[in-house]
Image 1 (cartoon, rainbow, N blue to C red):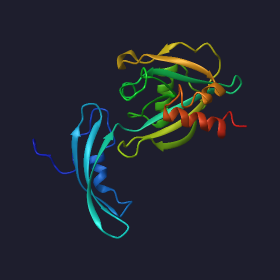
Image 2: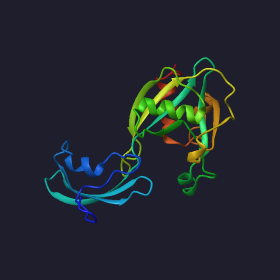
Image 3: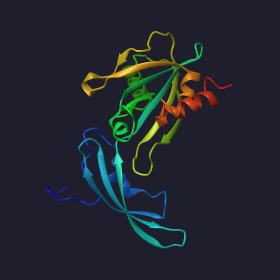
Image 4: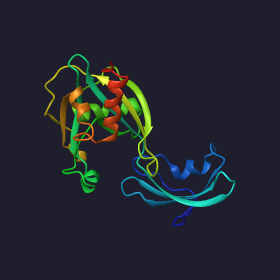
Length: 222
């Protein structure tokens, strides 16, 4: 790249190693009705925001040009920790500013432990995040499914896991990395109480998905 000159479809990866949409986006070939024309980097302040110009062919065969912005924060992982003997799950509660600014009463969301992969595999990343956010060192881990959480604008693919834990005494303890500004409260809830809280005190999508999986086909299925 010539200093000071933007090369179409090329930029420098950010400090956390996002997925490089600027590069792979121009090489996508799975859908012959979509052609990437240009990728412009708008921001790399925290994660990467890009504007991509596309040519898209509709059902009649006509081509149109579109511009789409994507927010690239990398991929992530989340996990439901459960105790089948005591019928409990281990969740977290922490402040989420985007939810607070968009109508949540205090921004304190109840969630499953989660985090970005960074340079780790999904399983290695979720082992790290579970220990950081709950204090639990995981044994056997089960991969449940993957999902795109906001595919209209966010590139993230989230890997969902579940794992057993044993022993009580964790409810109300604090966790999280001080260096990252985390102040996390650990919550231990009865599975029936947790499911009943969906739509009221539990309104985080990944948490709802894992709780429903747990009672439909997971460790608490009947």
